[in-house]
Image (cartoon, rainbow, N blue to C red; front, side, top):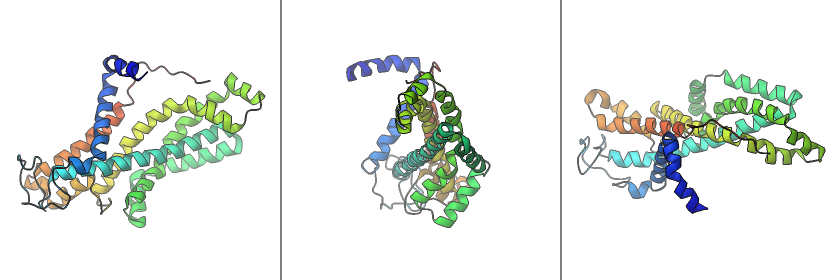
Amino acid sequence: MIQEFLSSVPRRARRNPVRYAGLAIVLALCFIALFADVLAPYPSDFHGEALLPPSWDHLLGTNNLGQDVLSQVIRGTTVSTEIGLMSALVSIGIGVTVGILAGYYKGAVEQFLLATTDAFIIIPSLPLMIVFVAYTGSSSLMIILSISLLAWCPMARLIHPRVLAIMDSPYIKASRMLGKSDLFILVHHIIPNCWEVICVKFAVAVGAGMLAEASLSFLGLGDRFSISWGSIVNEAFRYGALLLGYWWWYLVPGLMICVSVLAFIMLTHSDSGKTGAVE
């Protein structure tokens, strides 16, 4: 079975090169994030000559403290990817739960959950994240919670009508006639039929979470005890690297943010648009 899957990869890649290019980038990011300390050419406590341009000794030069920029970018991959993944898990989990409950139980439960979702949707995301992190602290946990606080709303709004459509299916009515419990119907019928939408939104949410973390870190609200791409760019701009011409300090971290967000969006690319119901 594994051999069949591996042999079909080239054919699938030719059919949808955009998705597989995104998958290759995402896998590379995960590999770098997992083995950052091994891949980084210099230890975290290294301090050499400050503001050296790119060379064979320092491929991306050094910053104002003499730290190797490439090593910082590699270590920053861990934090940026971790926050993106965790914030996506939390926000998608909340959104799926709210959307499914609203569509399944209807009535007062549906009205209350949808009204709550609408109330959260109209709140500006970035200002709320800034206020939340400023008052609760800029630890990684607080950043994840601040990103997830509003990111669940689109997922809930997307899942809700899909659940309503599934509820009218014959196999749902048959399950109820057979006396199946609500938990059985949710696990075996509702969630499997929403799985494709959940996966697509999860990929988008990871990219959005990484971008939100970079925004907070760029504003100086990132975790002060860890390195992320946004915090590297923040330090470069605070020192005036843009005006002084130290392009190697901020360019690559900025490109990493853009490429990573684009890679997760590329994962959602579809070549057929066909979906199938799971009964």
